[in-house]
Length: 246
Image (cartoon, rainbow, N blue to C red; front, side):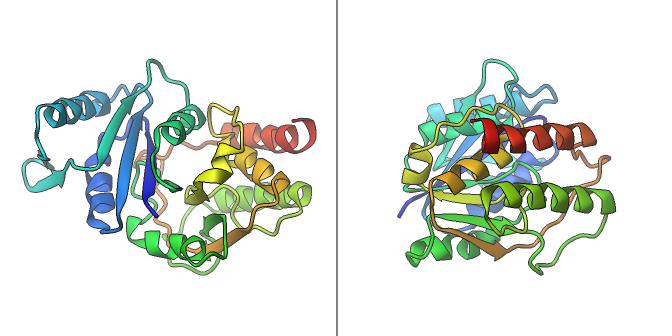
């Protein structure tokens, strides 16, 4: 079963090269879809340069000041016409993907692509239609931001109450879906509401959901972390909206 790795990107110039190197280093048969959400920090020109090189027949690009080589084969670059948000970027990526399995990968260094095998195993074994990688099931992780932890646990608990699921990490980036799962879901959220929305709609579809432990290397705000308390409030609204109203 072919894997499509869907990577929404917004202002990740400092990390995008290393992320793609790590994703390509995983030898699982895959395609990689990189969706730039109108970045303003130099990410977009870099991706456009690689896209043009690929169109001209190049199979690799020098990165990290020429110290490493990034294979371009299997990567597709998509560009949003304006900043639309993570949810909108993921919708486009899912629509363009050719694989039977869809995996969401953030464009930072918080999640480890070497763990794809752990995430895919329940689907490949025929036990699951959806897999969430949980940061709270005992995997190694960088320690910081107590209130982020509390916020994540609260939002997951509220989501569980309304979906009747027993997830430990609704907000995790690492979500994997069989293609038919996403084909039956109409996503609406453009931004970080994707997480509670997709969870609510999967629960309503009675799909088989697994959680597996993953490692987590969370960023600080100085390192580029974007989530704030305002996103938590919006997520709270989305949990009620997609479970009770739509």
